Length: 51
Image (cartoon, rainbow, N blue to C red; front, side, top):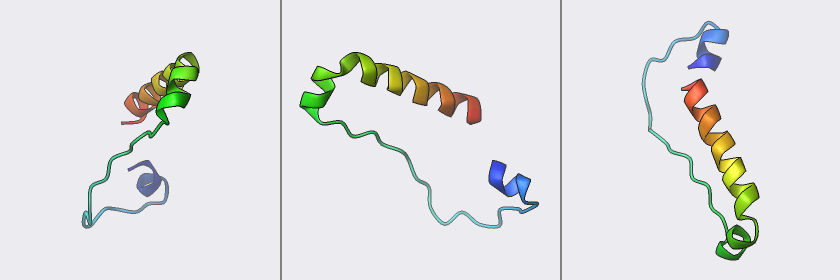
């Protein structure tokens, strides 16, 4: 979207749809819940503002 517009390009076909996933080791998540929750919130916020 944004990159296309910035370069004067247009989309002519969609080859595939993709999604993002955040994978966290269960022990790391338990040990770093606060930091990871903060990171996840920041990522969600960024996704909502750029969508």
